[in-house]
Amino acid sequence: MSEDLAGRVTAALNRPVEPEVRAFAERLGKEAGALAVLFYGSNLRTGSLEGVLDFYVLTAGPQVEKIWPRVSYHEWGHTGVTLRAKVATMALETFRAAASGELLDTTIWARFVQPSALAWQRDEAAGAAMAESIALAARTAARLAVALGPETGTPEDYWRALFRATYAAEFRVEKAGREDSILSANRTHFDGLLPLALVAERIDFARAADSVIRPELSAARRARLLGWWKKRQRMGKPYNFMRLLKASTTFDGAARYAAWKIERHTGIHVALTPWRERHPVLAAPGVLWQVWRAKKAANAKEAA
Image (cartoon, rainbow, N blue to C red; front, side, top):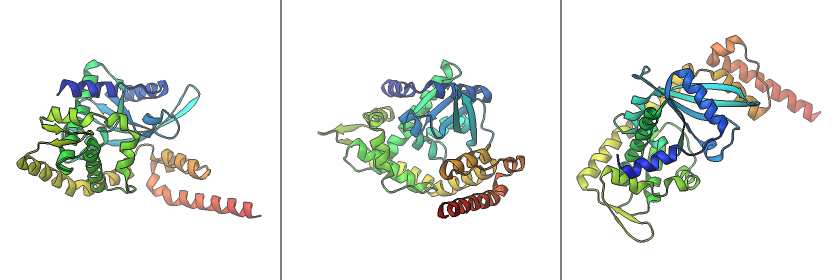
């Protein structure tokens, strides 16, 4: 791993986060017996504690679930504030393999070439392993970016080509231009990252004026990279669909998460019974009926 890229990644992971976020991450990490906890998403950028915080909890040992990560929802009252979090849990060794591009998964390296913070670590060795994994994600993303992008262009041109391709490959709907919003919202993070990752990958490039670069990628290596990508591109939607299907039945705390979302967006309180907690999917029609009736009653009251 390039020392320059290592330093860049380590500094990025050590970015400041709110004390409440670090306390929540420590609680999640210790409860799971984890090695490290990453914090990411829009709340990292804004510093807000509103809404749902996003964490990745990385554990020791081999991966248990074949379809990962395991997703759960948590609420925690801390210093007079109710914190809410969506937590993905998986083994660090699987995270590392996915970040390096060894697995069919595209979500880890595409997500974690974007900003994240090391909110908690068990020890310095765990923190170093986490930094190495994030650097591998940057390298994986960078080599595909120059294979997909133009022969000559700015770093933004290559990142834009990468994110456009990865969003199209995944089973989700994103607004057109999502790749532009990622780059504009995280301009400081991406500034200078691509050249460092290319050096670590031993991909030479020529520099021109106005931050334009020309990667010196042989036709054979480009073909290998595009072949590697096409295999993952074909599997992207089916693989992500399986994850969504699994999450619909194994999302720990799904009922509480749904109830909070409904109340946040409609103002209608949904009572959580033990049965609804145990069977969120089966309970969904009844909950939607309750919300519909409550909205209808509220509209009728306003009309009167």
